[in-house]
Image 1 (cartoon, helix red, strand yellow):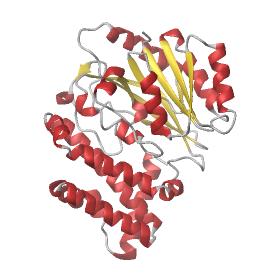
Image 2 (cartoon, helix red, strand yellow):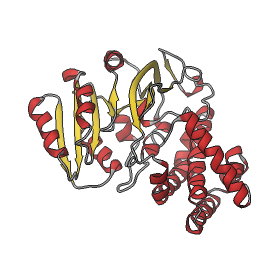
Image 3 (spheres, one colour):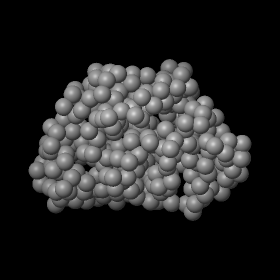
Length: 343
């Protein structure tokens, strides 16, 4: 069994995937790199196959029909043989020194009596044209260099959520929780770091910068105009998260830990805010109606959740009346976007 499986979803990634894979190869033969070619139409498949030929004990290539990022992650997970599992997008990379430290720590936990469910590290916004990078760290909220549970978690400030870039999960946990991401849909990474959480019992945080998250390309899924054009997919993910959070069986697990429930609620709140603000930034009657339909959906699913979201600071911000209110909301969003560097 490999120590760590790393899934690299690739779609038309010929321009940047080599830098990503080269950074992952430094982990050696304890690592399994699963390059999932999601029906690319450029040289992605050729490049991936070359890496497999040159590194047969490390790289495995899986060619499939296009199904989107979630489908590629599902395929990677289904083929993973590693004890732990991580997703690294094909335009991102890992810092070598931190990568080595993480592998050593995972090796320690591989033989431990208490299984590690989730390892967390810092990630860095590697934004085009900026020399100074924003580091997202969790030292104010999570115990450093020790195993902990949800009861030990402090307050995680808004904007400092645990994202896909932050985490390495225990592979069996992802399988046992039944994780399956929707196909042909962007923004499913939010589900990836949401649905498994009620099954996570033991965590470990390393205060090191591991993942460099490249942002700033005009065609990137987190580009604001691209997000507005894909608002249907953002809302689809939002509704799936509402479904999961309000499901009776899931709610029992979530409510078992107050800190877990608080964190998952806050994450759902920010996703709902993003959906609403994108509709406001779009400004079309069609998208504003989609925003209204989303809030109606939440109200019908769980009125108490709806009321809490509606009356929270973000909920109020997305309901400011008229064009002036929408303009103020858009301005606040731009300020937050600049501060947190999220697109």
